[in-house]
Image 1: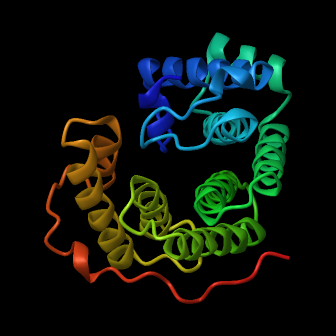
Image 2 (image 1 turned 120 degrees about the vertical axis):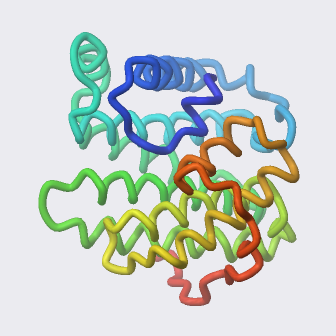
Length: 239
């Protein structure tokens, strides 16, 4: 899987970005066909394994690709190939959600649940961002699943993990971007700075995940306000 495409949670019309996204989706689809190849975790970034990990890879990459298609960033032959393979952005979002929900049903530990709920929150953010009309339903679910993810990861003792930082990065982007009714640029920046602090400490400054957080902070690498961020307490139960 192309790590740059997997770590990059933003839309772009740059040819290299689109090529990497298409490549990542192709590899994620292949992983679903042979999940036995994912029998062992590959370091701290991917602690899940087997079919659960394959569902996570496909769910995240489908969400990103559907987002790019829905906003018309993906054009030309690449757009035609993806639509021919997957049908439409809406069908891709639906399949992404289905894969992530199936994965959640297949795990029993809080760490895995937290990782998967954060991916589900990101999926609904992409849907809200791409919505032509009222995005309220997707917005509500986006925030609910991110907050549930934080609680799961905290209870699992993983509040200082790469996975918690990844969820923080996505949540901070959600608050900062202005798509949701609860958008709060200042809170989003604080979440992003805490994510950057953890990514830099655990992965280094040159890692794609670290660089992605820097980009979301408009190139800033300041982490002085990282300690100001607090985990949101308003958590809705999954029904």
